[in-house]
Length: 480
Image 1 (cartoon, rainbow, N blue to C red):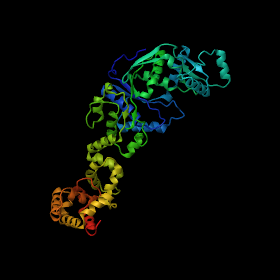
Image 2: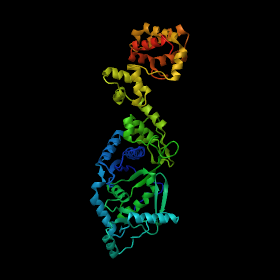
Image 3: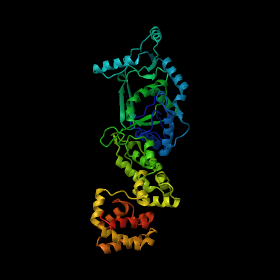
């Protein structure tokens, strides 16, 4: 069996794959696995394959498989060749399993789930690691027939050597050594005749010519079993790299609140794929790519020697930072398409584009557009306590002077030109003696209800000077 040599890098022009099970939607961990395999293949002139591992017929769903494909396309992760679907590979599995059984490398096991569980508990109680006890390992033909007569449907187990070690070099964790005695005979085929993960996964990789597998470190203990299968069938095993798990900022497993959302949910929330890709790239990879990068640049920078062993901590604030950078990088036309579902109904195309051009630099997600729609096209909600105190401190006279200054320059303000706005604020300052934050903070709150936001000159042009003046006049007639 050809195993990776100590210190060997990932092969040149690697063939990688992503092999999701359609038993649910993709989460951040799945997406990062797909991304890293894609980056490795594309950055080195290799191939990226896609396989749907649907041998668990009871939990696999066609709609999940469809969603997975949609998510990968959304991220920009294209694949090479036809998609391999495990449920269509039954004849290939049956042939290989028959070879293993004929060679004495596999045997039928008639133990029931209850018996397996009793044995597991007994071993744990005795302080031993749980492994299959070998109950059916040496049954003769008569004993097997007797168990079949009882109605027992056998699984097929791999006969692990009694002694020896399995060694390989993991691309992330380095040299790994496992004792055969600690593994125990494992299931290759379930009682319903479906292929188990250990078996179908390695056979598919070999038949597809996969040379490198990057996957979660929770699969690290599976690797010696799969190397044993490869050796028994005379297959070339891929090089393996086991990626650190993604945790929350506190080091605990991700919760729904802290990032365990599906890609579909993130997409529907309005996250941009380039933002998610940039964040995932930096979860467990210490690459040198600076700033927001597109996939081709990340592929050139991706390096398996920069994959880190420590847990990768997902920080929602970091994802939001990448999202803001991605929004800033949008073209005006792309920003309009991104925000279109959140725009007020009935906006003329020119008005919609103008609104998006002014507002988008203050948004991270489309849901944040709603308050600005009220600012520009509707009525402001009652001010919060801090904003109300600021308006009260400025007083009616300040807003009366501001309304007069805008009224005198309404025609120029309608065009969004900053010159009339500068002239208006200079007039307000002269009339009230206010300047700096004492001038601009109450003005902004009066016009928008918020302390932060886009520049006021183009915003006033969008809302129309008439609406802006009306808001100031309401405040000039009474204390807020």
